[in-house]
Length: 304
Image (cartoon, rainbow, N blue to C red; front, side, top):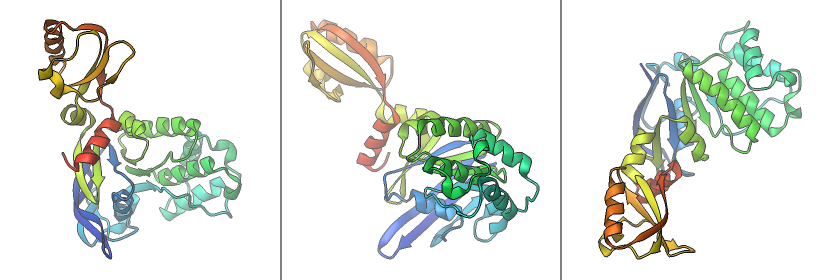
């Protein structure tokens, strides 16, 4: 089943084209990353998915329910953790979650509320007024609010921005559990190591357009490849191999080169060529590209 279907969505703010024909599908049970630099259109797209703003054209469906024409059904399928800290200062944590449950017609939801608070380490703050919480605790409550009606689709917009390591670990443990139970998770974050660890598939936006959409492993293979880092004790890199160099730099002993490879089978060919050229290798390391390398390369190129 398709959890979110986005078809040719466009949004303009006067002269600014925030989204320029975005189309993508997210399947039920996926852990999906939506990445891009500031101003790429991520928050605009999330706001359209959540029904907070309307697209100028195109459609968005959540579990087959169009977000404007069938908005009640679509909202029940979706839980959104916003980027901004928004809270009502007149309620305790438990009252806030009960109120949120009421919005979805769930008046007797204390068992699940208790479980959510326990998993987000909020139990000892249940009767604390929202305005007395720290910023990290308020963000935990935002996550709890998004999950209080057990939505099959969860959207996390920068959920760990400015929070401590403990919250990150607590949050990802609980979200991973929900994902394993079948919930779809869509994550936007500037912490690319989190996206690489959690997401199986990612879309990258730049200037309101999708410039990459693939699995993490496929992006690594097709975009950036791997690197063989060699420290040369004697000799130098043959001229016919210099096109493989990515980041040549001086090393304490001899030369250090990073050579791009597309497949592990190329390693032996490179070593054989170096031996034939009289190169003596002091040290070598095989290093796989990470999501940051891929992100920077795609943003620089603008597309696959």
